[in-house]
Image 1 (cartoon, rainbow, N blue to C red):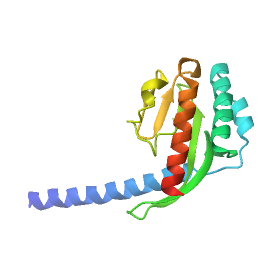
Image 2 (cartoon, rainbow, N blue to C red; image 1 turned 45 degrees about the horizontal axis):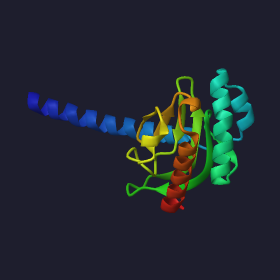
Image 3 (cartoon, rainbow, N blue to C red; image 1 turned 90 degrees about the vertical axis):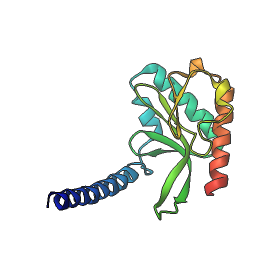
Image 4 (cartoon, rainbow, N blue to C red; image 1 turned 90 degrees about the horizontal axis):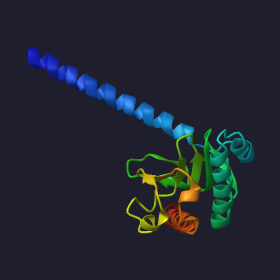
Amino acid sequence: MAVKRKASTRNTAKKASKKTTKKAAKKASLKTVPTAQSVTAFINSVENETRRKDAKTLLAMMKKVTGEKAKMWGPSIIGFGEYHYKYESGREGDMLAVGFSPRKANLALYVLGSLGDKEPLLKQLGPYKNGKSCLYIGSLDKIDLPVLEKIVAKSYKATKAKWG
């Protein structure tokens, strides 16, 4: 009888876990949507002067590279362009093509999604950290800006080619 209870508890835990995962995924996808918030007002509200200056530099660079108007995505991400995705699982939505967020710890650049963390240009960039689709930079004055511009352009082009 103990075995049945364990199996039953395990199945219940799996079901609860799946529900929690689905709810978390749904909530997460709702945060990253275009908003009517002003990009300029958001950047001007950044407390750290260096981070604010870097955000203005990235804003100009990404606008130039993409030819797109900047748009706020959620409360703190500035995006350029967008695309609609649909996975084999059936999950679908809209996402920014490239973008960035001037976070307290670093600048988060959303540029590796279509390139991956093995992008050869990263070797020439300067100090950075990366996640699955993000590039984290402490300060723009420590990296090679023309290389970053190439990465942004390559990412934008790859994203548009893949997703339209």
